[in-house]
Image 1 (cartoon, rainbow, N blue to C red):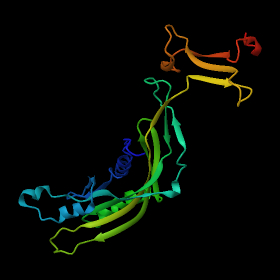
Image 2 (cartoon, rainbow, N blue to C red):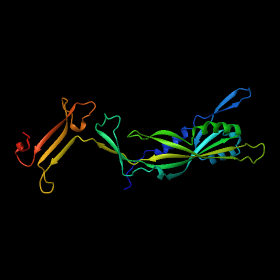
Image 3 (spheres, one colour):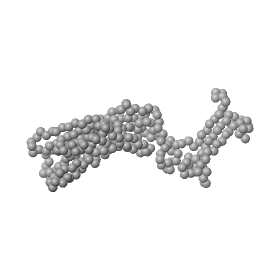
Image 4 (cartoon, rainbow, N blue to C red):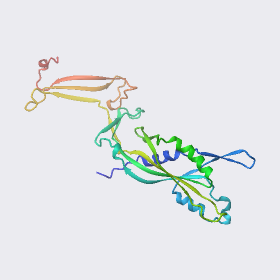
Length: 273
């Protein structure tokens, strides 16, 4: 059952979309000349404790000019759970016609409905002053009620897009300043989020029906087919295009219907002549 390779990068797309929400945060400080200076807050994926350890480490003389600056933000995945409240029928197939159908005319995709999963994501805001942290929070919190939707393309082959809800769950605050007055102060705001994403299985490629045959019989148990109806797509171009290569949007085509008396040679019995 397992072993067929497919990878849609949905977790990666979901976490990148989450980080994109916070990549334009700017704070303002009053400079020495009395003017306001704008500082863009950088954000990076990784554990918050890693950045706290870098900040707490005593820099060497060679690193004194490259010490990490504050404020900054970091985010990371903390867990993953199945969401039964958003469960969809697991055996239902969704069929999609591609927008660009020129390369493979008549192609359509089929895929089982997705499985809902929740990503637990934690956002850390590290600052050295209270005002910096409050400026960042006031630019984030008004956008969550308590959720915000982000649209991402989950399947590239089919162009499938989904609105992913990002829900704000909790906010924690800590001030770990316990050292000497000359030591650097670090204030940490921790925001916990749930990213309601979906996981999709493999994509099946199908073609539309170009030829159909229907057999008629008066007794389904004991009699063989008596009348056969055939409908087939044919090209009207010169030279004719092969049936399976006809593009219904650009090529000329028609449907040829035929009736055949397969029970006897007397076609007049069914009025076929």
